[in-house]
Length: 301
Ligand SMILES: CCC/C=C/C(=O)SCCNC(=O)CCNC(=O)[C@H](O)C(C)(C)COP(=O)([O-])OP(=O)([O-])OC[C@H]1O[C@@H](n2cnc3c(N)ncnc32)[C@H](O)[C@@H]1OP(=O)([O-])[O-]
Picture (cartoon, rainbow, N blue to C red):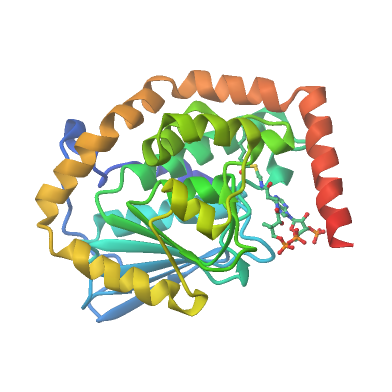
């Protein structure tokens, strides 16, 4: 664990759209998988499978029971994404889940409950870091959402360029933080606004709405709803369409759209960490989280 954390601290946004002084599309000819046509790397929470012939990497979350985004998940994702960013064979990344019924339950509540201030700071920096890597990736990012996707799970999907959700009414998606008595930070909010527009985001975030696939499609939170067994194949088909656009043109366009949001986060990063640590360590917020965890367990029993 300590080694993973040290690695995470070293990984940077080197290959992303924002490298080279904000110039987009700078890629490096460095392959980490070798020259086979198909290469996999697997760690405890994330499996990365890059098909060199198609240029598509499938990043599968595999942290049962709910793919919660704890320190291990955040670190492994950061390392996996950095490697893909640097790999010239990879043009597009699909995020999906190997855990039945759940894409991701969002941030691991146990990383926000009963821990030290130092832990909260490290945790929040890692959450920021993952979002920066996802949101600023020079690759085409598609979310193949094959399960429930609350809060941080929704954020990962929002960070992609395209979202496909399985047509199952139990697979709800949204930024539900308010329902836990916590507050989605400004860059979660920005990601939502950039996807569904201000008015819908305003209501959605205040109520902490979790949307059914039909409603998510209606408000533009997802781009397509397909039968559950077609989510991954549809994502691959869609990726081929994105591949028709020359990389440099797409990357510059993506950077043009996303850079202001990323710059805002970078400019406010340290304040955001301070705010999070101060907020999450309050007795009243700790109490809310405790009650929410108890409610989740009751629902189960
Ligand atoms: C300011 C900060 C911004 C915050 C952003 C966030 O992302 S905040 C995060 C907001 N996220 C949410 O509000 C999502 C809350 N979760 C859910 O709504 C449901 O778990 C589900 C719909 C994802 C899956 O339903 P399902 O019926 O398939 O599964 P189940 O419900 O039976 O759970 C199985 C086990 O996992 C446990 N566990 C669950 N989530 C978390 C978690 N995030 N963490 C840790 N643990 C979690 C659950 O307690 C149970 O543990 P037990 O009893 O086995 O020891």
